[in-house]
Structures are given as structure tokens and as C-alpha cells.
Length: 131
Image (tube, rainbow, N blue to C red):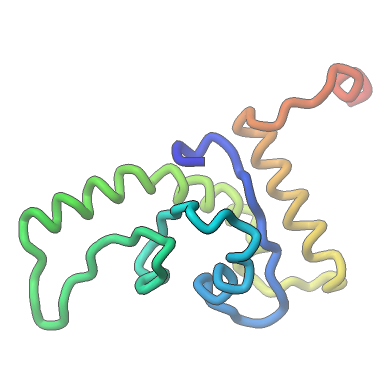
């Protein structure tokens, strides 16, 4: 979500290194064609994703371009904070040592815990009573 108030989509990924842009391109058919996204410079060149302006090689950004990047970053900071709250569990960034078939289940569980912590996941009253 734009203000980081919820996690709306999770791609658990596959074993081995794979860039974010590759994962996006593999899953782009799951989204509406007119839907727009925001990403970091790793998504540069993708037509559906707005990215900040890259500093040219051996060059500098203009004051206007720096201002645009600052506005872009102020909108995107919420998303980066949400990514950080998932990465705190370290499953995402380190080698997964359990059964590989359990990876997606573990990632989705972590996202559920994060959603619960930020108040985006509301459990029915009968679950609260048994916990």
C-alpha cells in the first residue's frame, strides 16, 4: 500500500539469486496492464514502474531533478520501512536452512506476523479468546 499500511502481495521467490526486476517480469501478468508501480533504481527501464532519476555517469543532477528524487523518496519510504520489518526476521536475506518446500509457508507466516504487528491483520474474536 502507498503509505505502508499493509502488505498486499508477496512473491516467495525460488532458490538461488534472482533480481527483483526478473521476479516482477515473471509475475507481471498477474497485475492489471494499466497499474503503475514505484521502485528503486533496480527497476530502471521497466515501463510500468516509476523510478528515481539516476545520476548520469560523470555528471550531476540538477536542483529540479534532486527535488523530484526527494519527493519520490518521501512517498516510497513507507514501503522501504515495511520491507525492513519483514527482513528483521532474517529469513529473507539469509540462506534458508529448512526444507525448501516450507519456504513459501514461512515467508507468508512472517508477512502475517508483520501485518498483525502493524494492525493490518485483524483476527476474529474467537481466535483471540483461545490465544
